[in-house]
Amino acid sequence: MEKVKIETEFIKLDQFLKWVGLVDSGSFAKEVIANGEVKVNGEIEQRRGKKLRIGDIIEVEEKEFLIE
Image 1 (cartoon, helix red, strand yellow):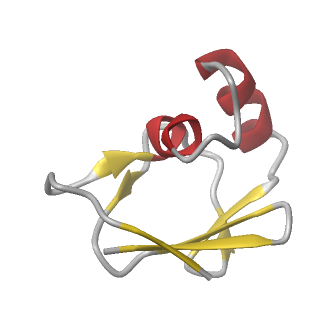
Image 2 (cartoon, rainbow, N blue to C red; image 1 turned 90 degrees about the vertical axis):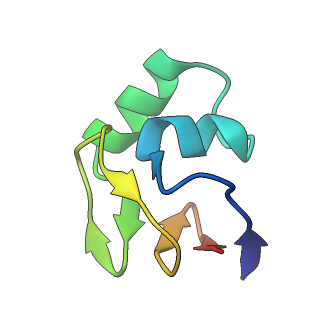
């Protein structure tokens, strides 16, 4: 599991995917999320504006990230 430190209260899911380099653009992030390829805390998440906070676990393509 990769740990990702954020300096703000939250980061939106689509921004997070771009920030960690899983997608190249916002439109590709939207597509990946809409296709149900992303889990947040074990549940499929299809809202690209979902606010991720410290302690959340994101799973994409067999990779896991922990927000710190």
